[in-house]
Length: 243
Image (cartoon, rainbow, N blue to C red; front, side, top):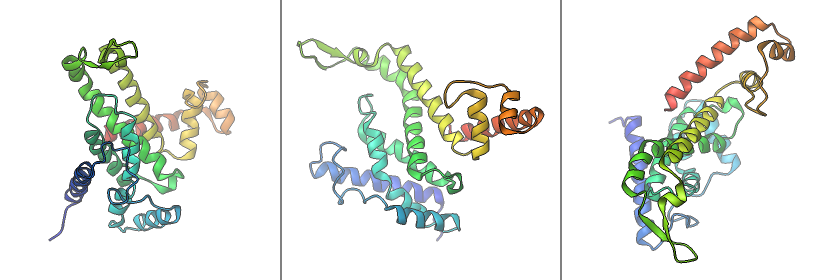
């Protein structure tokens, strides 16, 4: 019987959840303690990753699961950055794993970026999108709930840590937008990225006109205009896919 890709992905999520259960049973009180090989597999060496990516590029779909499994530590590392958001760390890891699966499924080695770099963006983006969807509800439920006390014995509220609700949502939305754009830009060719960076100041904040970009690249302004429209359309499609 053939197992569908969706079922295989669900299987990996379930196996990750089981690994988390084992970790808690064994007394690992925080996911930060992932140094134990009995919980998560070790990361790939550079040579191993290169070999697996080459096999994946040549149609060996079976290595996809290995790439996901051996990058789970990256998910845990990124999830821990959000452990002050009120979301259970186990949930953050599970959500981040979905981002990792998306990263492995869409990674293009020809773009000359590291899998870890691309996957980090996708993992972070998946978590941020989840936080954007849930931040308002969380704020309404527990915004004034005491979290702890400060050094002077005063109650420390969630609002003291996160700021006002509108600030939280706005900040998360901005982070999501930045992360989505970074993931989408990673799918562009080197030339396409250069055009976007020059036109919209993505590298240094300094925007250039189409004519200035055309002069720098030695091509006509009309050609830059056509390329820009095509690239923007490509970015929109990629961002919609990632969302």
